[in-house]
Image (cartoon, rainbow, N blue to C red; front, side, top):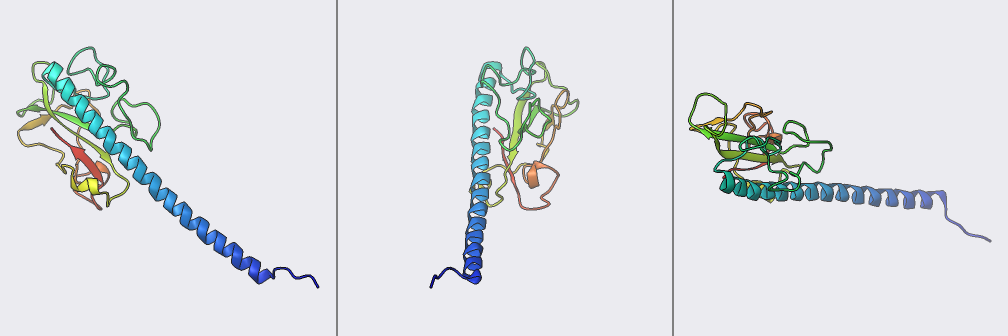
Length: 188
């Protein structure tokens, strides 16, 4: 007499395989998000170092890290300080400052009044950030969490898209956290 598997036994095996596949898929999704977050944080640190070199050479920060002007503060970081300014690993497309693929960046000049920044009224500080997918990321405890404005400074908004972002808000957007802080942000 030939013996084989019963239908119940086959269904149990298929269910177990399906459950294991689901667990692996969820684990891979979480690992990918953590990998993208690590890349974002590394990119922000790389941009921060490039901004220090830009300031050393020009005595000011750029209005837009993705800028393409001929001279400071209109020139961006590429190609002099970086071969290419990094973009968000979860987005695609070119970046000039406002697109979803761009990291959040705003420069500030000293004092109040007009938001025009130029060589005569140069950007002297900045705020840079990136939305993080994993809101329990330990790096979020080490960032700045600064607001969209900096006391005593005026944001350089002429020719700069999206001139403000909140470092203590979900996705770096808004004025207060609507959910857990998910913005990794720095300032000099």
